[in-house]
Image (cartoon, rainbow over all chains, first blue to last red; front, top):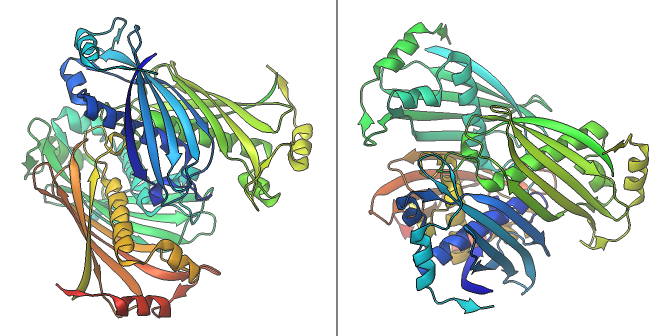
Length: 142
Length: 142
Length: 142
Length: 142
């Protein structure tokens, strides 16, 4: 599998925690989103660019596995990997490390597809602009 | 002061509470938003209608006073009042009653203005469509 | 598989949508949470009861598949099913139906475990109070 | 007026924006919260410390004035000021600057009070631990 990697450090916000004092489980999807943005920044493929080419890339699947809780004020590192696929989909994998104690907190994955802005129709073939962006990257074997 | 009134009952979501077990203070602005939507439904003035006339109505001011805490699972009633003003602004006042104990939980207000969708320019005069909607309502003295 | 069923109707909040005008994908986990609460209410097994027996039940796994988008103001029905398992875990399955057009919007599942409040230790055996609650329910074959 | 100052830079999250593509108005209260935490860190007065002395400090009042919109991906600086008061209250003032264009985006204030953890009773006199923390700070004239 060929991949691209990126990392983002986040401090848990008070408003992201629930009455058990830990990050509310849905908020990891925010952290994943932030990490995707970071990777997009690092490799030059922004929301805006995608949009300018006439597409958006809605999420069609998410999976999360929670390994240990994260408390308010703790710092976490989100590691994100973009997998290279032939199909017209975008697959990211994530791990969240609690920097306060070094523990693995959460792992997850998301899948996105290409949808045309003009009519919200699904694109079944990888768009050219994306294909050529892929070809310019230095993919790593993982 | 001439007003229109509406009410909405809400059950507090787990994800709306913070580590102290109470509704996170910013979430009252969601409750207010829901109550505005309810009033808009009741009196026939939706976001869509506003948008179709070429406007949106961003919030430019909010004020909240917290009187007593609301806990997860409690039910609240949000009473909302639309005030009639000559200026090109939309002013709502709110109170949140904790239905579990009858206590006043929060009071607040929001002010919105009219902005043109096409260029995000502020409209200084009350738009015709809104003026004529106002004239059709049965305002109450308050 | 033996199951219990429940349903909850929700109107999409403005603040739950993203710049593409659709429900932000992480917010389905809120809807799922609300549906779990509804089922817990319907069958008499609340957070408080669990807590009083010395446990909480953190989520350890979630999966979502998004089938069609939901827009601001649309009404959805969340159908939730509790599966009966021998292991010390709580598995819910969900579907979200867009009531505006009858379309299936999202399906998902969550898994919870039993954790001791006093030391956050995982409980590997189904607790007695939960076992006896299970035995009193009228499970349906599905 | 004697004050303490702090600053925090934030990048707007996708999930913090609404269908008009701008930060949802309630999310500024998150930014304010983050800025308070930053100031607390800078001057050594954390949530935990307050809690260890038997208090928490719920927000009883908020005010926001929105001056210009902030869009997804833009970076903002939140400047926060703690005012010194004789009364048993904590008053912060905030301004949010859009770093993308230098514009003032939002100003606001929050007021907190001291509440006893043990019985949620309001404390009418400034607690000793807080008083002595105040005395050790290098307040600035503003």
